[in-house]
Length: 303
Ligand code: KIV
Image (cartoon, rainbow, N blue to C red; front, side):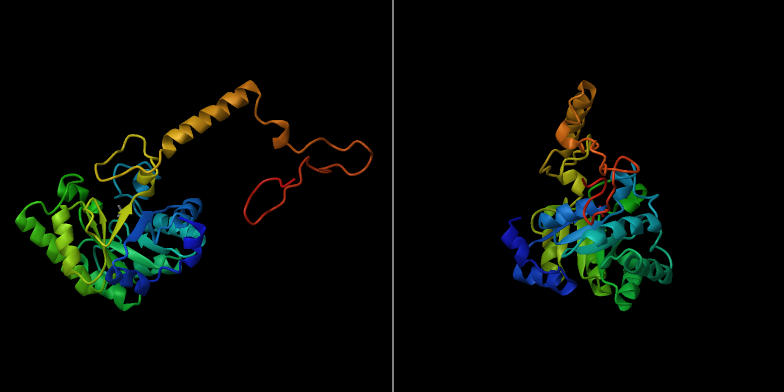
């Protein structure tokens, strides 16, 4: 994103995100799990940063998102929301934090805003969680729905499978979409459904749809940042486009560092802090060899 475009950007509030649908402006959502990535993704032009429970798979190395806890997502939310300036931060409610008693769902949702600094929460499921969505929204907490392929239901679905492929199944997904909208969600993620079904849902709903593996007709798109940056080594799902190859870049950079360390080429003199003054005056570091100075945007010794 150009610096001029960045300067023109404004806070991505719920009303602005909703208005983007009526203006035909696409919403860009990406997942973020820490402050450095949040800053980079926002600088790249992301409107929404989703602190997804996908962190279980890409950060924690799990096979599914099921073991992820509310405390863990909130921890990552805090890091992301500290860095986000203009992007709307969505906290993803993990498995079993909202599927039961709507009052418990509300209590958990509140924690994402109070403790995590998120602007809204996301819940997987349609009709089955409509009561929870309605109660959370009634407390002034904006909600993003998530229907179609819902990874928290991986075992019920028999794997991460595209949903709504038959006419009957497609009608159920549409019913879920309508239920989520009626419950008060301000946007809905459509994951892993046929493109024509996503187009129908997008036309039918007044709230924005944000697709992932749901075709181009959605009002916005979301990708797991590790996928779009090429940080995942073996995982190349069909619906993902890799816009960079950070994993290979990281391997190559580490190999170059390792070579230089082993050959004694790093650190070079310009990476060091010179020598101790020998004129009887002050040394650069009277006590510990280095004066460590805290900085707003860095760490380690300054000079
Ligand atoms: O957890 C997540 O990253 C998500 C996206 C895939 C939409 O829910």
